[in-house]
Image (cartoon, rainbow, N blue to C red; front, side, top):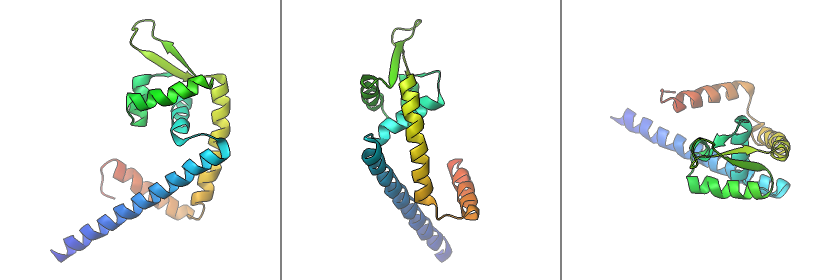
Length: 149
């Protein structure tokens, strides 16, 4: 019984540490994007999703990809469209369906943002050795699949 309690407490501590690292790094990246690029993490996330799906996606698919409500995705897309970084088009087969895609200006801006974001991630986590990175990546992949790490 003592062993399972100990394991349970250790798992709880691991979860708290994981959450702390996640929150701290997200906060750092939010501030980095705001300070260096006058943008927000949600805008970056929307642009990243659209960059990966260059042909465009429906607004519903975009919401699902980002794990946010349709309203949250719409608000971000509204601002990106106003800035000329995304374009909405209505489906020719279903008037209720709207597609969204990056414009050429959106692609160009995102590529600059992504390069700086990658450099900042490297700075933020640069102290992790290659071996530890491989181990951590393997553990997180297995956890994401519901497997025991």
